[in-house]
Length: 126
Image 1 (cartoon, rainbow, N blue to C red):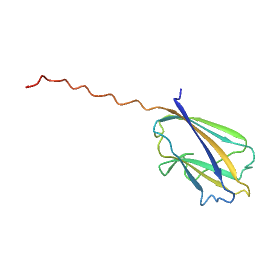
Image 2: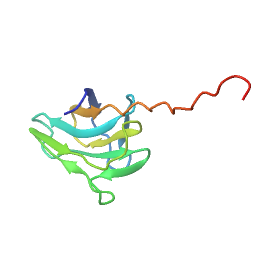
Image 3: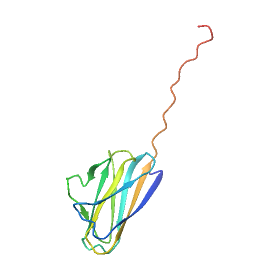
Image 4: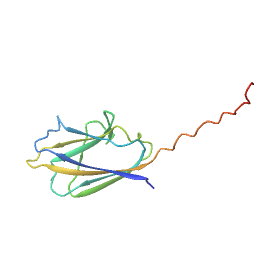
């Protein structure tokens, strides 16, 4: 179960071409991303596409230069083995004549705190 949810609302301007997509950084404190929920409200009608990147590299979908296209859909991914929280990006195009907004929720588990190393104390003079 996640410790926190980091929500993002991304508005993609009308006329944003696939060849020059909008890149939105999803900045939040580090942690393990357990799940990603993306809500695409009704309206884009196949004219909006998106990808998920991490630190400048496409990771969802895995196959290069492919985009998810959705309309009136909630997409949920349980993630395992993906990079830690910092560095995530939402890359999208919108070839419609209207602005469209996509909603993202990153469900995150906090990273464990480093444990202090125990060094035995020696008596003074030794």
